[in-house]
Length: 185
Image (cartoon, rainbow, N blue to C red; front, side, top):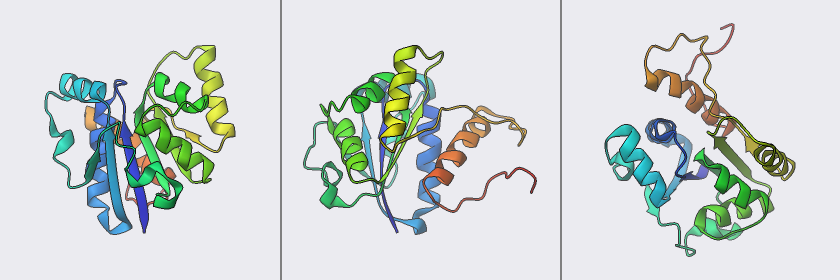
């Protein structure tokens, strides 16, 4: 059973975070702890993009960005997976340079130092050289960069279905069993 922390930053792409939370609730038999941290900017972007405040309605434990008493702020908390979705380039840059100035960057630092799974769903485009180098640094440190780039072979018809192609990839990367479109099957 997995212990997962989801971090939601202020990058555009709240539809990805909402889709992941919905899917993880459905897969609750595969994890025993699910924690969520949202930045204040994430709440604003969620409200702007999705026109709701449902980020707080999921049956998970929520933490503020300054709660360094959260169990995943330490390796002894034994959280094995962290997903940052969407991951702003500012957050990625702070992780890449080891700046742990809030709970999200501290938790990412812990996940990396413990050699556990960090998945950063970056959502910016285009990338500048600083972004690319930060992605390289996080990758070399053991993190996984998963750009929020949807696939289309499943012929998605709605924005939610397009976003689900990214969410399904993230769920696969996290090591959870998931029913989704599979190429050639």
